[in-house]
Length: 345
Image (cartoon, rainbow, N blue to C red; front, side, top):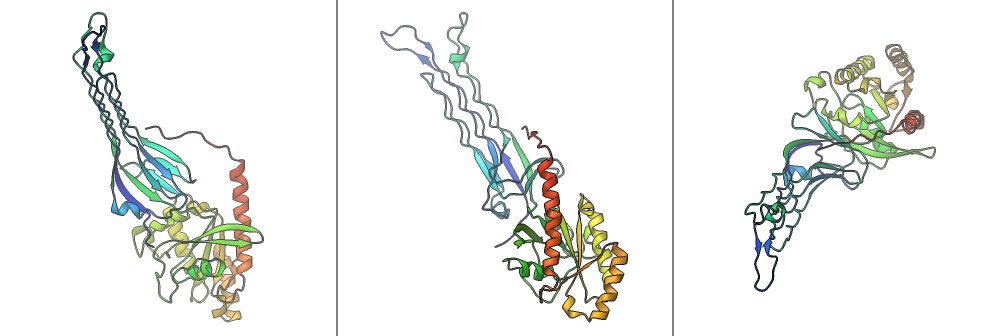
């Protein structure tokens, strides 16, 4: 399955239907007069969050969405039919931005959430609306209001509880495959992972979602390599798992490169709790591994864990450390007040 996490689309609400100019004139029936009905309301543009999607790929093939126009009014005081709404279905974690790409309109995180992005135009009044004691035969009606239109950006930020970061070939995809049922592509060359992968992990009766993103290299915030565009997928995570390849000659430099890119990216990533681990421990002699652990501890200020996804060494300890941080964040979020503010078109 292809993965698309950003799309620009054009949306337009439906125009309102026109009012009708009509008169009732029947033989032998008194009290004739104007009976033109109102136009129908135009359709709205609605964005709905659904559970069975995890990509914005559908918006690669259709970028224009227009709601239906309201029906025109007719004689005998008949109101025109309302225009059908157009519904954009997006996966959980989708953010809607204005055309400038910076103004956040809505953030849809739960399946079932719906937002009326644009409202259709109201229908015009028929001539029956203008009848009065001084104007008993009005010969004019209102046209329908025009529907609103705009360009929007849809950006998907996957909803995971923990995110894996590190240089290319740090063992991120191997770790994800070892602890979950996910099957990411694994190979012995850099940038094997070209799009984020998710896996569900269970440890000591605790379940959480682990996200693996493409590796970062020095200068990623300036576009080097794949860049830092996929870092948005770990913005929502409660904790970061920073894997450093123990087989590198200088793991401290590798750690500092990734931390530098995280801090350059910003958006609160640099302040997230981090579990630091030396991966591929089975490929390094024990005396050399101990030296690298001491050097990394001195640079990072925390004791790094030792893990090998291939042999399973240290994997439960890493998962328990992640689960502890996730539970702490979930407890804080449950206690936080819920804001009722929403988007108003």
